[in-house]
Structures are given as C-alpha cells and as structure tokens.
Length: 506
Image (cartoon, rainbow, N blue to C red; front, side):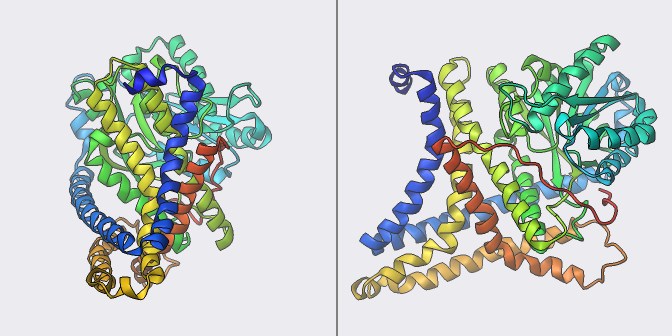
C-alpha cells in the first residue's frame, strides 16, 4: 500500500521525504515534550517515568551484551592466531589490501600507523599497502609520502601511493572520494599482478589506525573458516588508546562510550554495521563499484551498498580484536572540544543511511521484508535515541514538575515522581560504574611521565557522562538530523590529529 502511494510521486521528492523523517521525529518529540509539560504536566510526568523505565531496562539489556563481548574479547586476545591460521591449507593464498587515506595529518601520525602495520605477526610480503593522499594537500602529502616510502615501502609486498584529484564533479571532498579513487588504482595493480579477487581481503583504515599484532592472522582465519566469506564484512573492536593518556577527560569519555556501543553491537551481529576501520572481500568491493564518493559516512554505507547489491545476502562478522585509533586531541582544551563536537556530528550524519535504505528497500522486491524492517527500525531507532534520550532523561524530565500547578503536584504520581526518577537514575549508575571499571581495564600501559593518581582521574571522569551525552551526543546528533531534514547537507570534516608522545600498542 505504502509503495503504491509513493510510486505516484517523483523519485527525488520521495527520497527527500525519507531524508526528512528522522529529523521530524526528533523535533516532534522534543517540542512535543515541552508542549505536553505546559498543557498537561501529569501526562508528561507519566511519559517521563515510562521513558526512564524503558531506558533503565535498555541499559541492563545492553550491559549483558557488553559483558558477553568483553568475555569474547579477552578470550580472543589470549589466543595465538598466527599459529592457528597456519593450520589452514589456503592461508598463504590470501593477500591483504590496506588503505590508509590521509589529508593534512602530520608525519608522526603516518609513521606511527605504518610502524604498527610493519610489526604485525603476518607475512608482510602478502600486504599491498595504499597510502592515499589528496591533491588539495599535494606538497605536504608528497613530502611525507617520500619519507614513508623510504622507511616502510620495502617492508611490504607492494606499496602504492595515490593522489586523489580535487574538484571532481559529483564528488564530496572527503575520505570516501579519496579511497574510491585509490581503490580503482589498486585494482589496476591487482589486475596487473593477476591476483584472484577472492583471495584478497581489503582493510579500510583511518590513517591513525594501529592494528593488533594478530589482527591480520585472525582476520584471515575467520575469512577462511566462514561458510560464505565473500558475503560478509569484518568489524574489529575500535579502541582509542593511541593518545588517551594525554587527551582531555571529555574526549576519553566520548571515545570509551563509542567503544562500548560497538562492543554491544558486536554481540548482536544482526544489527551490526561497519564502522570506521573495517575489512571486507575485495570481490564485493569491486562488485559495488568501490566506496561511494558523494557521501560523508562511507564506512557504514559500504555495508549497505553490498547488502543492496546482494539482495540482503550480506552481513557483518564481528572480530574481537582491537584496532587502536586517536581520541580527539588538538593541543588546547577549547580546540579539542570544538573538534570533538564536529567529529560527533560527522558520525551522527550516518543518519543519511536511513533514506538510502528506505529508498532501495522500497525499490527492491528481492530483499526479505523482515530484513528490511529490522535494518530500518534499528537505524531509525538508533539515531532517534541518540538525539532525544539524553535531553529527555537529564533535562526535559524535570520540566513537568516545574510547570505543574498545585493540583497536579498534590497527586500521588506527581508527589512520588522525583523519588521514582531518583531511584531509576541510581539504578542506571550501576551501568556507569561498570563502564568506568571496564574503561580502566582497557587502558594501555601508563606512560612514565604520568603519576599513578591518573588512574583515579580515569575513573572519576565518568561523572562527566551526562554532560558528554548532551553536549557531544544529543546536540550534534540533532544538528546532523536537522541538516538532513532541511536539505542543508553536511560536508566531510577531517578530525585534527596530534600525538604525544608515541602511539600506544594494542
């Protein structure tokens, strides 16, 4: 019925309609909560209590998955994956194509990532490393690329340097456009070498990514033991340990929250998307025409490209080994805050995947309805909660009682609601305490220049969680969804990176 109605409208207007849905729902909820608090505070109190109770149950639910992922993570880290992969007959046939896109990053960031890559426990002659730069940064990139080539080029099977031209019509300048260009250049090299596409695993890394020493051995093992490896992407655990001892407390809380969110999703692969640094089959990448070059969030979109291309026969397989990246750190506290907000807004702009899914699911009759519904619901509910939950829990939840008259305040539910909300928040603190302890366990070794008291700061930083979830969660998410709703599309913004001193091992 809905499909028949939409078919009457021009396709561009239908796509715009899908773009408007997430932002409309967010603003309808926020403005509706305020209006309900004014017009009928008692109903608003019922709504707030029910909403907080739902989130308490959800936190408990997510903690279970976080614990499951943590156990699998510890079990996986403890194993010798190079020894295990060597028991497989075809493991030496596998080549790894690794993309490192860069724009304006300093030499020490590039050197740290390449140094980490060169130390992995896997035959480096099976690596094709692509350092992908931008024409807009030509002089800086070529100077750094020459140094990197001389220091690391000979250590890998092949080392390719690409330079993405600027101002290509139809592109959005950013990571997606860069690695799209680099991907085509890598394909030319692979075709020249006559390597079978099925024997190549692609890893798209952020340029600050430092892989666990066993990452490629583990990835190869999982790839070769999967029942259908060509129809799956592979998502590791994203941790932000490279500069975590030197970054501001706010950046550490936001970074650890991202890690915990990903860990909970790793235990639920039916809702897992690719995020940030990830891996996938080269054949699938070629089949979909490489990463989209006209969007901001190419890391999650590439999964959906494959999902649509294979009519729903595509998934994400969790990898319980870490890829370590940088927290947002820009030297000064204020610049770090500004950069943190911009990074979160860019990540939240993953809401652009909702209209893409709705559009292609509407056009496709081959994807099972249950899969369509599940992915649409997970995406829409996720971005909606990201923007609304912190504001409702920490701010709007107090509004009905402030605006209620004496008659409303005298009711039993209104009289007891402050205590009920206080009890619900106290119970939620259990999850916060667990997160605080786990974030400390995940820390890399403490640098010598830091006093042991810093461990206490790493625990106490979680008192900033409500502030972080509003300023660096709900507000940038609302910002991103509002831009999409109004057609004020967001361009790609590169997070500024600084390291002091060396990146941490993972």
